[in-house]
Image 1 (cartoon, helix red, strand yellow):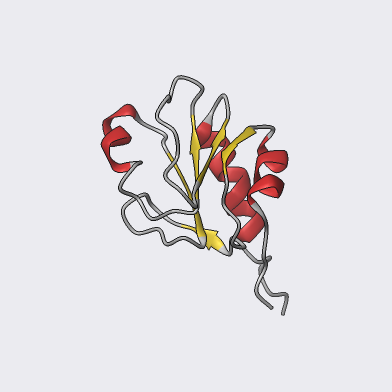
Image 2 (cartoon, helix red, strand yellow):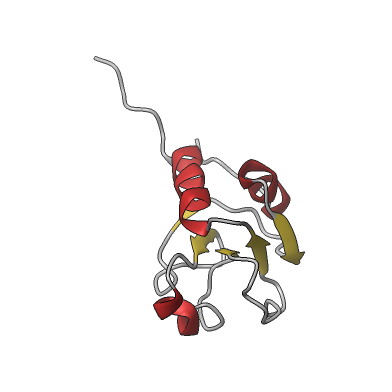
Length: 100
């Protein structure tokens, strides 16, 4: 079964604030360069800042100092530590290991 979450649910999970509108359900995580509109990604290092706006990610976790508004149909979740927040999102979308 495919797990679906909304941008607002992701914001609540990581204790962040939502900026922009992402109406499609989110199904997974990916890097900024490989994400689709169904993925969550993150800006964990300033050297990747120039990849945020061209990224296709539906939601990007960004630090408070990231000022550009999200493109239409996409959203930012502003959080204090995007790397830690991304780890929480990974755990959400990663299925538990099968028990044998």
